[in-house]
Length: 601
Ligand SMILES: Cc1cc2nc3c(=O)[nH]c(=O)nc-3n(C[C@H](O)[C@H](O)[C@H](O)COP(=O)(O)OP(=O)(O)OC[C@H]3O[C@@H](n4cnc5c(N)ncnc54)[C@H](O)[C@@H]3O)c2cc1C
Image (cartoon, rainbow, N blue to C red; front, side, top):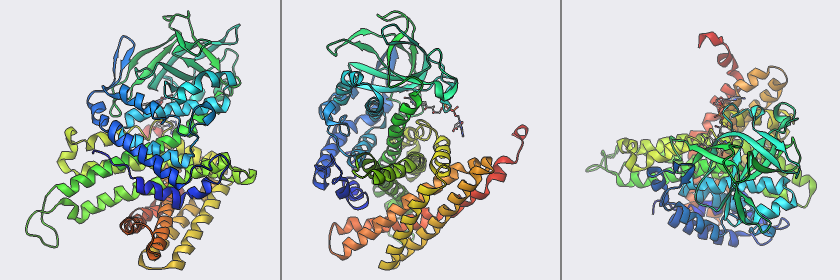
């Protein structure tokens, strides 16, 4: 078995930190308590461990290939994707009225993690399909929803997200693709999109592209972008894919990682199909509101990419632990008769604990964010719904930015634990490192997440949501101190220092944003990392508190709970302590960033 899903930890996060019992009281989620979560997770683990995970190395060795516009995926992917659809996994979190199972995100996020741990390249196809489904659910007309959603939700068709063009990456104001209105209400789409994940492949009967483009009279900038649905095969009255639309895969990229995931250059309007010149598309929602709708899709996808970071970190950790128990090298520093497994060496333990603590902390934070999303969407009380939504939206750039940044450190440590063998491809540790490298780039780079965090999420409300979360961190500190004991006291002290650092940084961001805005942006990524390490560490502190209570009450699995406290303690001593340095960089580092003239570079 190359991957074993951490079901126990996932359930702990859900039930003890994200309060699944409260999620299950939300309207529509009454059937989704801890028992259902356990059953779903166990089934999901079986599928991903047995079917998807074994294809991970295969995908790296035999990436998708392109020939004459046709993309053939890694052997085994097509069959695994069929099983994925038949198992109902694509529809997990989507509404029952379109064939989904309507599970809360609190449970769904764990399933997404498993799929991504099993195989990042494979998982990208469902990930983008989920995003396209969300956008259609939000803004698609009933006709578009009826035509596309059931087939996407049952895994027969897949979805893509077409934003990027050669001149428009982080800055979507520069999108140039054109959408020309037709007499029958449809549009003809012309332009070139690049880097389109699963833009072409052989795993599904149809591909539903969601495309950003401009109508002829659209205003300049982001206010003139509209969103269109453009299927590879046009859908006839019976809902069957028919004529070939005018969208073509010109090539796919050769990449550092996630090699099995085809990254396509798509040409719209090359006049090679069965419909004449211009790909036929249908407007989603209203003209010029495309970016707004795309943000729905991007928020879902950004959260999911954050989960990808956690997923690849988990896989790298598991592999490193297995190697560290197996590899014999050097005597124990405290003395031994011969070479010992390297896990005995304190520094190897430090590396493994860093990997473990980062991963568990980020998982806990994502789980708590997912529960806020569930309450934000499904809560009965309007005020509570708005508050939860604000918390979720504050956490999305942190889950995305922080979980992916930490995955680079964790997968790099995974290579380090393996020593020289880590650098050798056959070992497999290097693949996780290479695969993880894209995660801080796509769906908005870490800098773009950080810009969002300081601007829309912190400065805009004067730091209100950030301070509300900080107040909750203080409550945890008080609870830890009240309970006492060596570990909880130490965790409380570190958490308190981290929280104070975050508080100072929030004050700085709110102030600087109104005055010296370049200074605020100069520290934006350190600010995001500070928020990431403190808020994820806060979850570890909460976890330690619960674990301590359960242990003393004689409840639960003592080995798991003791390990949770040890991991939380490690997080506090080794990771939370980085908060001070990050605060300095965020609030006092602008001079160094901005001093040199451009000519001096
Ligand atoms: C494998 C892969 C799959 C992808 N899949 C998709 C997909 O399915 N659909 C899709 O539409 N796109 C996709 N992309 C595109 C991806 O989202 C973009 O590459 C990403 O958003 C960055 O844009 P860019 O490459 O143009 O870099 P640029 O925008 O040119 O950025 C270059 C650097 O400048 C920095 N930068 C730019 N603007 C700012 C700013 N305002 N503040 C601070 N720093 C800034 C960035 O952080 C980065 O470090 C994919 C890309 C890859 C490589």
